[in-house]
Image 1 (cartoon, rainbow, N blue to C red):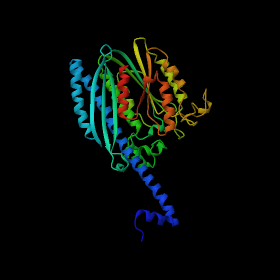
Image 2: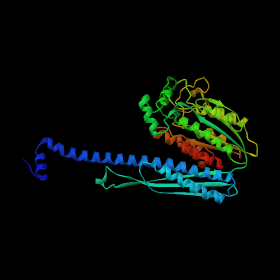
Image 3: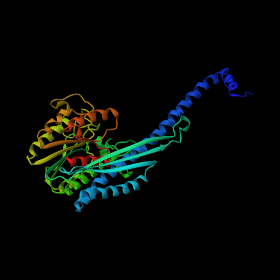
Image 4: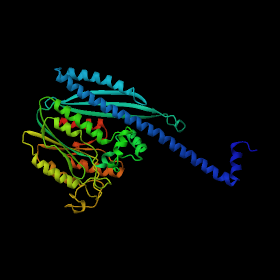
Length: 403
């Protein structure tokens, strides 16, 4: 019988199995440590993401509450104080739902430009994840922070908002990690874009999953309602959807009634051949023709808002013979995203601003390419936004309103 660590190790060295067991035990320890750190970091990232959503919600709540008080006749200073108080109460209630320790938060509403009537709300949340698995490695807590800023304005004058919304199958990604997990269990895939005409969309929704396209649809209806409620604004709206060609085409209409009716029809579109990607060249060429017929007058501010994941065509044919990809003028081999020069025609004219909202694809190589193309497609980088959740889309929409 061996006693003591030294004797045990020496005994193992004299045994072939023991010689293997020592490095294996050391390696296993390192692997377990790495797994433990990875799990703890995953928990921390999840808590940070939850905090970010809350921060976005509260910043939006703050600016919309401010606007409501001003519309009710309050002075801007009174409205700012009341809105900050209400936002703190709202934030206190929401942070109770967070899975983790929230150490502190701050809310500040600033009247940025009294002439332009621009108001910003900033929210900061900081917290910590208490590490249960990696104490032995010196990790007691993992700190995280979330910041959000929302902008709103009380514009005057004439505005036109024209939305171009991607409804191609690749927009069938689940709206959140939870939705993607539900879809994985329900249809064996994290996307409803795989053969959506074979009921995978219905099955995913029956299982309780929401798609990104559903979030976009709801956010659009909310946005145009807020635009209509803005004081002293003459508003016209237009909605266009696309996959490999244009689908919904409303033209420009006074108010929001037709827009909201058509927005209810937004859904993943069945393509003739599956495989993902969108014929951006063909769609943008057609949309440019639309915009030529909707050229704004000098006293009108026209905003074009493109919402897409930016994933380009995979050299597949669309539901009709139009825009057969390898016969399209200026054809180029498939790249992960589109050529931003195809947006140049949209940006002509001083009274037109092009905004792009990116719904991030599922793979890192797509994200890099789509981010680059969508950012370059906008009038400038200031008009490029992330649109991965209802809160992000609302936040981007408030900034769109400010212009």
